Image (cartoon, rainbow, N blue to C red; front, side, top):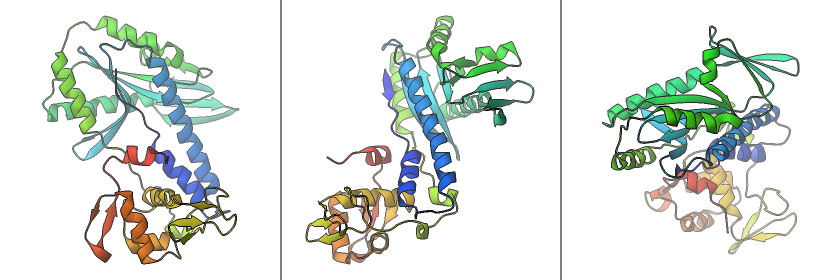
Length: 329
């Protein structure tokens, strides 16, 4: 049973908004595109893991995808968590290609691809740390801690995996054998730690405490709003600078008209600039629009707000994953 679905990552939405908004020929475009492709490959790898695990029986396996919790002041993110009456299994997915060598002694992996070598931190240590944080989190919320197993799944079927020690074969699996490994773990763990009611209670707590990551993408690349193109983008020709005429937006380039073109601009503001927006901030992001027009376009979006009149501050909705992944009708 899927307890929590995997939504399209907010970080990728931020990258896509940034690549659209950044001024043409900006010197950091190539770096941003490179990083975006790496994150996109990772997301596609996680989707492959989701597909392979979809063949597990519906009953007895409670699956949480892309779960992010807080252990005291630290957040930790889990690609895939499988909860059963008897154990918990954490799966970290990696989309590396080429040839991978896992060195137990140096605790790193070396990737050989196109004749080049590159080292990465060992994802086994990463998923072990997730297990450590999860145990602390469960103790904090007074849950019984069951056996917690962990695996690293290599999603790319053409990747060659080599290890320095055979014991690592129990922790690193290619995607095509992931399902079998999960079933092996399930068969060898027999003592129940939870009742169905306790599993349901833990499931609700995991979902309730999930906290989506909302990074500052501009700060990551030492950018400011001055590096971005301003205005409402035309959904037809993609040029910026639509003008507001009565209750519609009109593109001065292609004459296309839209009633809701500003919805995308508001979401991009939240993705790139700030989780809150005031009238004057919206005017700066969409120049040439009057204060009255700003009020008329922000208020109907049903955004949470504080303050009144000119001091009103609009906020992102609490469920930011649903908000950013929603599509206009």
